[in-house]
Image 1 (cartoon, one colour):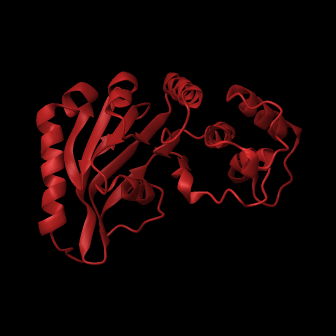
Image 2: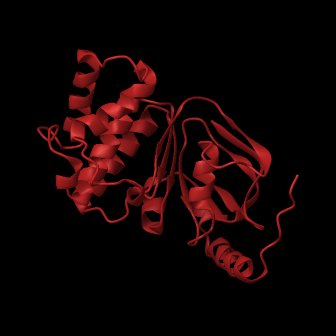
Length: 238
């Protein structure tokens, strides 16, 4: 479970997200949608404590695995696929402890699950975009946390990869993990996500996906984004 209580995050003089209050329910699968620049990535970084809050509090009940956008990964770094996946075990095992056979078996199973058996010794620079995203999901499987946050995981991936990732999301939902995913494709949100947060710097709507993504709410989100571009409120520093 993740609970937001009057959360505001400011960049310079203006808030990126403004007075957010609500709850990602335990065991829920939630899409986070909204126009470009609406604060979706900022919200995930605030939840993972990568971004300081200006006001408010965030309560997180459990460890978090966070998958940033693909662009944040340096693909030229000399890292093998196995090393990338095993990075998911470091927090559980401790950074100074050697990984044992159980962890390497777990990594091999995760790679098999995402269709990358035999890719372990390849460097990440040799992977296609879809293969790399599947390897990153394998790392999440190894990480094995109750809360998972994903930032635009379906962007620029092939159909096979998208279907593989969606199957993993369904698996996590069946396991009652709390999963929040930034999504741009409204069709994916309607088809695969029971709950949705519609964000436009402020919460426009938050609840079951069909109600949240109504035409009225989507229009309000666009209008709010346009308003913020021209007349954004100033941050009230505590």
